[in-house]
Image: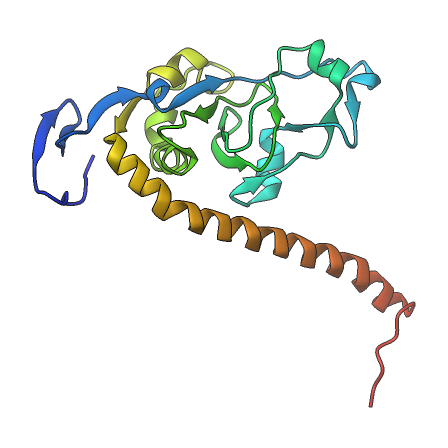
Length: 218
């Protein structure tokens, strides 16, 4: 694992090689709480709704292709939440798909739940969403290498918690968060604008094609 030159040039040895002085090697559990998900019974229609509690699956992220996610193709109801082991996670949670496939990543724009195909990380306040996101993004291969399973590979919650993680000093984390946060907010805003434009296109294009809307020609 390589790191860029540190500001004061002081490094110390670690199990991962040289790291900046004041940083340490911990685990993903030092970055935040690892939370899995669940699927309410598909046999009970009352457990699902179009507009209720956002529920995300890996398929949703495969279709989403954006850094931020608000909801999936279908929501779960309060009853569905109670009757399953799904947990509501706060805005800023970093969703990480742990199977089929491993490594889809997105940031929750609001409170969400997921199915069992995730081992998401609720960042500690001292660590922040931005660092947690980039750490997971840059360590997909490391995490995937720890997956197991005969039918398909999966990263368990226990394994996810134990993945080694480079933990910067609180000062560095604070400075990084302040520098990265405006860029994250800008990207979230741009993604929202793109979604609005796509929805407008999808509404107008069929009407233009059918002649319902005519474009004046000078």
